[in-house]
Image 1 (cartoon, rainbow, N blue to C red):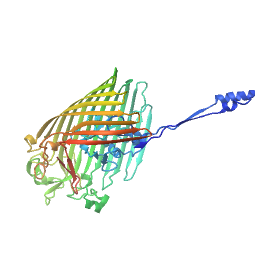
Image 2 (image 1 turned 90 degrees about the vertical axis):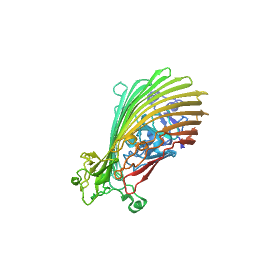
Image 3 (image 1 turned 180 degrees about the vertical axis):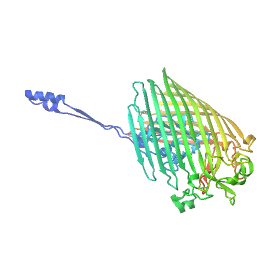
Image 4 (image 1 turned 60 degrees about the vertical axis):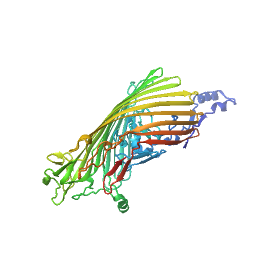
Length: 604
């Protein structure tokens, strides 16, 4: 709930004419009065309406519960803010991150639903990993360029290109190019050596072409608030818009991110009480130690681009067409130990590492070798979204087609560490059995999705009553391979096909311009996430599967009912009640491994 300020205009006008109207005047006085009349000034003083709630509450009329943050609010927050940190103040949202400056994903829950059940889009593009549903929002956009962030706490948009939005949806937009040429430079600093430098250039309209553009770049860094290590991030945002005709325009949006940060060492309660914020990785290397800062970190990046078009053809016909591509990549690296003899690569055993006696860091008195475990990974998602609209009298019909092609790969390699804690990720990886690279993971994933949606919105009683009904039908094909020695048959490759219908109905009634009630019944789904739902990974010490795929591979499916009331007047308020019915609920339990940089994840 928030209060709004009302604009109150006032006018001040010179009273020279009034003072002269009831007095006798001489000729010279008349001339002075005429000159004074020509010099009269009118001053208008107006208090402009301030944004409701400082930009934390945007008025909505859709028959769903929606909370929004406008740019007015975002620009007042820390310049290192991410989408997750900004929405943590909204109703139903619980968000946590590794620190105020992070390049990794955060933990997010909305109305009790986990992150894997929350769809995320940025400028109409699916912004989550299409296989694991992790979100890397720090890689998407600088907070200075955010236009608006919306959270649908329950129902999701039937036309939204999301793979996993069963319980909620987050959508964000970029702040478009300015109408006039403009340069903005900003710098900020804080504790733990944190600083961010930002520059943005807006071209304004280029000639009389209807083309406007902007480009921005930023650099930010900071020390990790616990333990040793630091965080660095380089980022570029850009956009170009072209107005073809009234109601028809095109936009090209591009973003690029490169980031590097140290890894966090997860403490037990006893360690936290003993060491506090000093608990973390070691800044000095000692032979055999895997918690050295030089052996643990993340080098991540992202590249995305989209072409958005809106065309109005008249007679109520319009078309939205968008093509996009989003790529996230690593690698991650961790300190690890490998058995010099009698270990495993995949499900295949080895007697000893190849040429182990000449390896850097080899100690004949130690049965294990200290290594750097390098996990190279990437995900690439590309697609096309077409939505046609036909508005005729009280009826609006929409048809949507979405095609998505996504692929991912992850390859693990191990590299020897010398006595000084140094290793070379571009050098030769450790091998066994005559040249077989060691690794627990060598996966490839491929997913194709075809989605069709039809939606019909009808308006009655002069727009006071709207009824909106539709259905989305998604057909997905997902396949994985685990290319490790000794892994064959159904353990090597898995192919799954899924068809999911998702109907919804939305009803909205406005008593007047201030009072509104709404009700909806919606459905959503998401496929089981990650490789572990279809194939196993294998231990390097036992050769046995560390996880088993789901015996019954079915998508999670959720039915949501929601009833809400909105008021907009002197203040704004929204209250809603909801009910969830979830089948095939997929639970991912994550627990810290004490004294490790890793977490243990199990799926049910």
